Amino acid sequence: MAEFTLHDLQCFDAVVRCGGFQPAAAMLHRSHPAVFAAVAKLERQLDLVLLDRSGYRVRPTEAGLSFHRRAQSLLRELEGLRLHAAQLSMGEESEIHVVIGDLCPRPQALGMLGRFFAQCPGTRLHLHFEAVGGPWERLFDDEADLILHWIDKSDPRVEWIDLCKVPFVPVVASGFLPERIKRPITPDQMHAFTQCVMRDTARHSPQQDYFMIEGAPQCMVADQGMKKEIILQGLGWGHMPRFLIEEELRDGRLQSIAGRHLPGRTEELVVARRRDRPHGPISNRLWDDIEQEAPTLRRALEPRQPVQ
Image 1 (cartoon, rainbow, N blue to C red):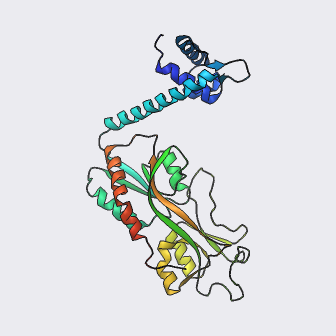
Image 2: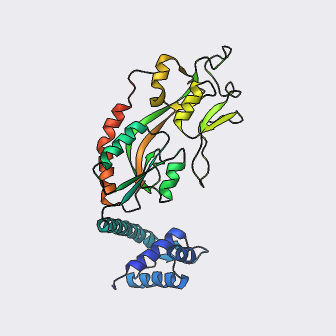
Image 3: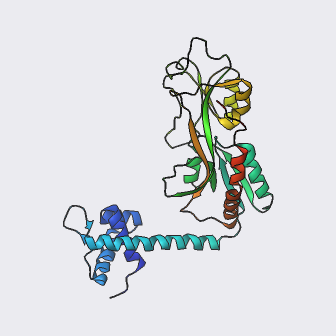
């Protein structure tokens, strides 16, 4: 049996995944005849019919499916080797970009980053603050090495370290609601009151709406600190991360209106990075450092007593 090449395997894999020679050629930035010839050569070398070409779309034969599963494993290993080689060839980075999202406890996160970068004087830290979908967008626009935010854990392009869980509580200032409004409070009852919501800083991704009551008057803010102050001053109501308002809930300046109709939500704060991109030595050390710091962060954010 003649030796087949990596190019032959890549072309076959692309045809199976794309369902045809033309889309496979476009994905690989090669010509249609080149992809067709590579797959035909692979079949000759293996003495196997890998593709059924009798229909409108080419489909892998039973032998083709079996061979493709093994080929994918090899191609994944090759991609991992390529990334590893890229990491080995990188010197220490001159700069690292970190995005802190709106649900991240800033004193703890900034303290953690400050301690780390004090030991890396040759690497400049660029900090960015984004809200809602902004951190996720920067990560996939290749404008961030790490983000501290929530992620879609089903996305195979990312890896993450769990930091802590962040409950969001719907709150109002003391005396904000008239006495006629009885619990459990419903979204319809809150429709007439100004809702304070975070502005999504994503620039080109679809805007995300969380907790918003359609048709209610809104006050848009850029950060959680401004949102908290507006709610404290009785200018609106909204959902706040519990770690920011525990003191105000205990002393009564803020009141939770959570119930079965307005249950709030718990988000998972993580540090995340691209799995499909190489990372330099400083970035990898930072990743390991954050993983070691994660239990301390979780303990720091535990409520000192139950908050209703």
